[in-house]
Length: 398
Picture 1 (cartoon, rainbow, N blue to C red):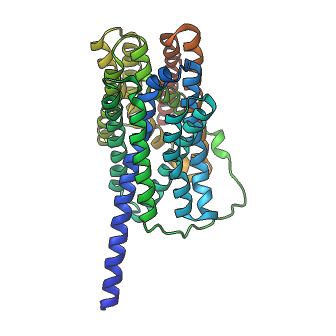
Picture 2 (picture 1 turned 90 degrees about the vertical axis):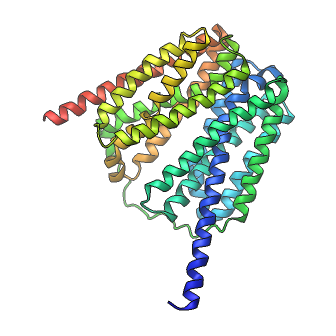
Picture 3 (picture 1 turned 60 degrees about the vertical axis):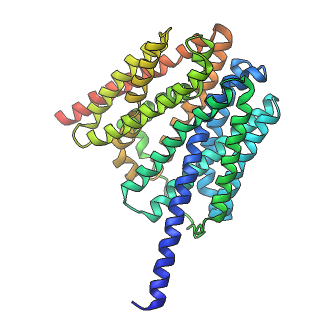
């Protein structure tokens, strides 16, 4: 090997290492952004005198932004290049957190939450794509990336807790801390050597929608839709529910959000280990029944101990539902290029709708009534998983 080749290899290795570090750091920030909103929402609601319906719409607009950027984050780089695109989306997080600390105008708050969603979706799209490209076929890389996201999700509620412990308006400082982290995210992306060679998608003669006739795929779509209804409701409303129902203080409720994500992380690691030993349909059944039982415990808790038990159980058993369901239709996704887009879009609609529904119901009958709506989504999830197990069993028999 000549000297020039050796230099080029070392430079490539350095660039790759920087890309890894940059993606890991920005995904840590992304995890923090995802969880901080639910942690500061009850305090923001009090400061700006917002009703439950408006609070629910804020969470829904975050999900809408996330959904929109999941698509535009993949299309815009074709025209602007990767670096300009991710810098544009990344700047939205910084501006959004500044905006929500400056005004209680509902329309501007909706814009701010929409922008946080745009940031979250685009960063997720970009980082997953980049890590997959520079470590193709290496599962540990994406697993590590998503573990870093979980760390950010665990930390951010404690940031909110630190600032709101003695001052309910301290959420403003927590938001400013996230604005600072989003600014550092923007700087990191600006310094990264991001390749701009985005190939135009190959033209397809026909968009095959055959997957829409597949009962396994349609069942999986229903599972993910109802699952995302419940997951986004729990992530967005948990702190507000505990605080306003008097089960625990707002500060303690914020720590429950971190506890939830800790158990989700543990649950996903265990499911990953067991996935090669247990059939997917049985894994889903086990998780579904545990999920239902502990959600009922959570919903009917009026004191600290059962509430904490419910959180641990819900987090642990809901952890494997989404990835296992996705894996169960993996072959269909490979066969039909449009299948994954449909699955993500349909499930994303659940995340958009449920927070707003909870807010509307809570304004009418109270926060307990609002959160009780989630049981419908949980029951539908369990029912569809049972149906999935039945048709899978019939397939084995035939």
